[in-house]
Length: 188
Image (cartoon, rainbow, N blue to C red):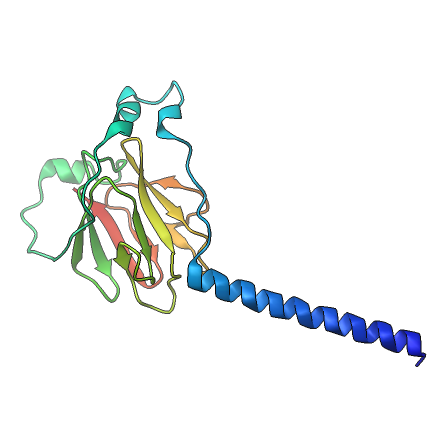
């Protein structure tokens, strides 16, 4: 083999090696510090076809962080609540998250008006420690009066009502949301 071909082969191998080093560093950085989340448009810029109450909710007062409490025995189901199943989750209809399966099954979390980050990180509002959850996996947030679910570029994805979440989607009352090995739903 000529010396020039050998030199080009060595340079190519060195470039490939550096490519793998940078890929590992990028992956570690994303796991340690999370990835940037895409922001939704300002709720004040809601199209004219939206309801007027959605624009008015932009001035809601901040509420303290979500509180976690053990599940209590459910009261008798109200007929109105059953009729609302599958309707869009708003601040008026939804007040809590109930974990239905997974390591923390039975746990209830009260919702305020602040976004709720879900993930393995201790900085998350809902910490889920399993191998299938990213450090900053998903986010529940208000867009106007409507609760929205956003995947934060997680490895295993976020699922809402059997569909993978690619962009922020409106949450339905009682529809299962799956993050890693945990399933939960929003309830009134």
